[in-house]
Length: 224
Image (cartoon, rainbow, N blue to C red):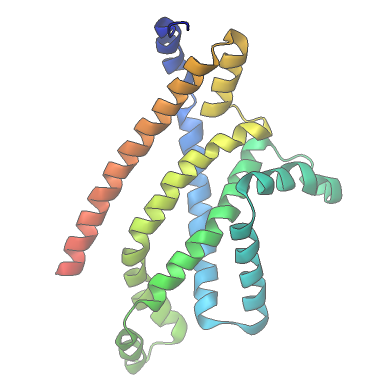
């Protein structure tokens, strides 16, 4: 049994850290897109527009019922064969779109549950002052639902950070992609993957601390 090459591991840390901005950037871009898409789908699932509702349910079912890796491969390698306009898409863009679509399906259900959790009296109060359904949703219901859904959405963002590691399968050199290349060159696979695992762990723990602070603030605001 050989000893760990600590010098190699320490030297690898700054190399992988150099790709953290790309990893975080992909997750932030995907989170922004997923929030918008999920909010629209959640609102639709509440108001239930007949034909659109069927499409939204099918979308949510598909992206919740199939693995993210399969979706990334289908979008990046498969769709360009039948839609030539997608042939020029790069791995980063494909990964962001894939993450957006995948997580929006989960987030839509969380936001919908938060909307339905708003007391019915809030709808009635908004209606009594002459607000339309759209105005009630935008000004009264969604802000309250956002407070309830925020902790869950923060968890999805943490999951999204970890899921960016699949982008290396599309040729993206992010944290995992850089680690794979370094390991292939040195043949020190255990040390390389141990380093990236610890770095992901540290990032997730830091985000978890921020999430807990967010929850405390929201709980204080709701208690007032």
